[in-house]
Image (cartoon, rainbow, N blue to C red; front, side):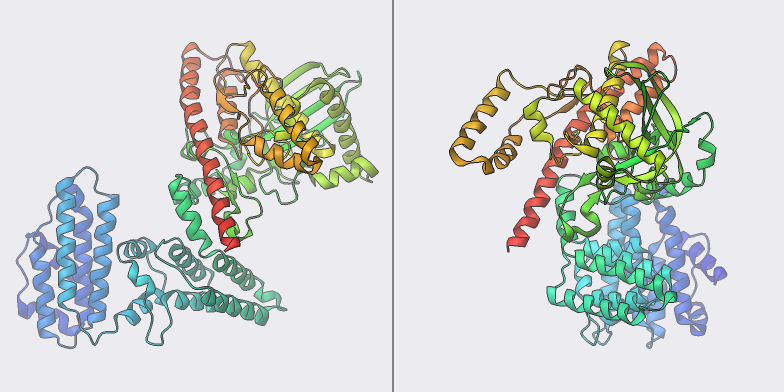
Length: 634
C-alpha cells in the first residue's frame, strides 16, 4: 500500500512516469478499494503541502487514474468513491480556512480544484445508489474526524436532514447509537455530534421527536437502574438527556451569543493548558506562606466556583486578625499566558438565573470549570494557591496593620449562607467553626459602623444581578461577606492611590441632587399607590441610575469611598486579575519606572475593553431573557 502511494504521488508530482492503463488495472484487480484509498491518500499528502509550495502539480493525472478504474470496473463501489471525494472536498475547505493565509492565488486554486471534484462527483452519480443510507452508515460506523463533518454540515446543511431507508433521520440514528453504545469514547464522539448539530441554525427537531427521544432514554435508565455496575452508563444517559432537553434552546443562545461576540465554549488549546497545569500544581507552591488559621467559605447553595474564603481570630491585645483569602489566578498562570488573556477577553462569568431550559448554559464562565470549579477553586479540605489580605482591626474599626500575601490556604469548612445564619442564631457543636463565625460577626458589626453606603445605591444594588457590582447585603452571613470584600477592595485601592501606582479602580458618580430627586419621586408614588409598589419602582429606577465602571482614577459615590477596586473574584471577573497583576508588579517588589509605565499602558488599554464588554454582556443577558420570556408565553 505504501509503495503504491509513493508511485502515485511521484507520478502526480511529475517526478516519475505515469502508470499505464494495464498497470492501473493490475493494481486495482487485486483490491479496487485499496487502489482508490492509495490514490486519495497520495492526493491528501500533496494538498497538505500545497499552501506552502503554491504548486499543485499535475492533478489531471489523479482524474486519469480515477477514469481508468471506473472504465474497467463496472462493479466499482461507487459509495466508497463518493465518500472519498466528499472527505477530500471537506479537507480542502479546512486547508483553505486554517492553513492558507494571505495567499489569494492559492485560495483560488483550491476553490477551482473543489469545483472539479464536485463536477466529478456529479458525473459518477448513480440513482441506484442509496446516498443517504450510505452517509448515515459512514458517520455511525466509528468515530470520525469531527472537523470535516462540521465543515460538511456548514457547506451542505441539507445532509443533516437526511433519512435512512426506514425513514429514520440522521439525528435519531445518532441518538439511538449513543443510547446503545457501551464504550465511553464512542459515547463522547456521538455526544459531540449531537451538540454540533444542535448548534447549527439550519437544524431543528420537533417537540414530538424530542419527547420520543427522552422517553427512550428514560426507559433505558429504568432498565439499568438497581445495578451498581451500570452507574457509569446511567450517568452518560443522564448527560444525554440534558443535551436533548436543551436542543433548540442552545440554537437560540448560540445565535444570541454570536450577535454579542460571547464565547460559549473553550478552544481545545485552552482545555489542554488546564490539563497540563493540573499536573504541575506541586511545583507552584514554593515561596508561599501557609495560612494556619481556621478558614471557611460562605456561598450560595449552588455555587461551584469558590473564590473567596475568610478567617478571623481574636488577638491577645483585643484586636481581630481578619483574613480574606482569594483564589489566585496568577499563582497558577502567568499574566501574559493565553488562558489568562482569554479570560480577560471574556470579561466576567455570566449568570442567567432561573433559566432551566438553558441547561449547562445557565452559567458561562471565563475559565473552564476544570480549573475554576476544581483545582483553582477553594474546595473543602484541599490546599489551594491564594492571595491573602490580612487586616488587624481594633474595636473602633481602625486598621492597625495590613499585608497582601501570596499564600496557600486549606478551606476547613465549605458553608452556605443559610448554614452560617443558623449558627449565628443557634450556635453549633464545632468549637473552631463557632469561634470563627462569632469573631466574623463581631468584626462585621465594627466595620458596618465604619463603612456607610449611600441609601439609594444600597437599595438598588441589594438584589442586583450584575456580577460586576458588589452586592450590598444588610443582614447575617451575607453582611459578613459583604463587609470583608468591601474592606479588601477599599484597602487595596488605597495602597495604589497612596503610592501613586496605576490601578484599575471601580468608580461611580452621580449628578448633584439626583438621589434626592429619586427618593422624592418614589415616596410620592408610594404614598399614592401603596408600599407594595416600592420594590417595582426601584427596579425601574435601576435602569436609569448611573452605573459603576472601571477607570484609572476616580471615587465611588455609591459606596462612599474615595478609592475602591475589584480584587476578590479572579475566577469570575477579569478586572480582579488585572489588579492581582498590578500587585505582583507594585506590591510584591519595588517596581522600576519602566514597569510602572508598562502597567499604566496595560490598564488604560484593558479598562476600555472591559467597560465595552460589560455593556455588551448586559445586552446579551437582556436579549436571552427576552427570548426565553417570549418562548414561555408562546
